[in-house]
Length: 460
Image (tube, rainbow, N blue to C red; front, top):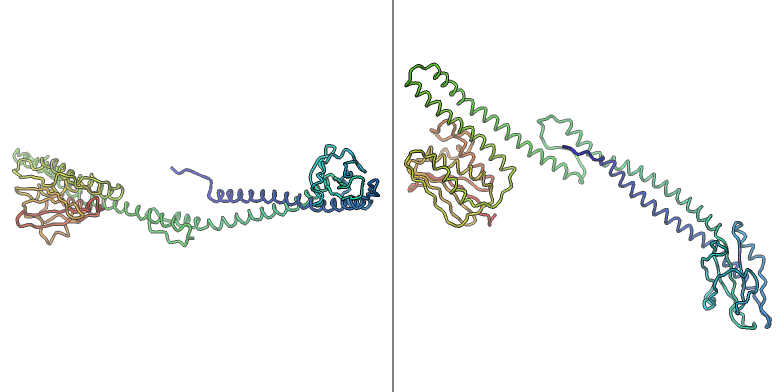
């Protein structure tokens, strides 16, 4: 089931658009702050200049302090026609010399020597910008600092800050729109290799599993490599399936035809003795056909598990003992010395117990049916870094000239019966899947041995 999600293009454009929107919002906030600061700086210079002009007119004749605010001071502040001006001048004793007595802005005379002091306040319910400056009067009735408090409403400042912000906002929004358009084009261009891959895959036939041969950026090279790896695995599985179907069709067709012919003969045979002989042959052929079918299925299972099942620590000695015990009934009424030799402690390897049991079962079955006339021994032992399991019988064994050939599927040793030829191939493939090996040995004192050798679990 394929879960549909928003397209990668829309997701990228959306994420980048959100990033641009966040950046634009930050720039607009910065522009508003900078515009207010610039407006305050411009009008603060006018406000300080006017306050200094008023302070320069403060004088004393020894008996009283006077002040004569110049018209030019207020004319300077008239550059902001929508704003209102409030002021007051107080002597060192805080007595009002002129101006608005209700302009309630505290005067800190300890800081007047440092120069004009700017601050924000409220007057008559309106926000105002205030400057406080002073003039030292040494010869007045009470020597000290006379103070000038000059306040101006903020309408012009706010209007200037708004104009500056609007201009900056227009620029920021224009750049954001252009950047988003550029991002859209860039993302579409960056995703073009994916569209090329899609086109290549869509144009392929159902059996075309060759690796993709397209030029892609480094960032999606791993994706293409993964696709090629998957297609390689799929091609391998399909090859196994085709091989299994072909082998099954080829190997089963002949015994089925022979079985059908014998059934036809049986149906037309009137002699009771010959009927019994034909029934025996039909039963024998059926058993061989069943064995062949089981081996075909087991072969396919072993190949599949070699690719699909993760190996885990198993005791190959215990598997060998159990498999040998299960195979004892195959000897039937024959007098056969069957034994197991191995240590009591576990012999661990990394393996698939089902595949290992199938490999040993085939070796033991071959030894019982086609090899051992009197003795069969399964032996397990530890060697440096390896675990070895061998199936030894006292029969003639397989000629050395055929050792390589009999490892291939359906290549039975000389004199093999119908349906043989898969047991050794299964064992060889299981050994290879476990990073081990299968070899044959002819021993003068024992007979013929099939040896499976695997890396020990601690060594692996």
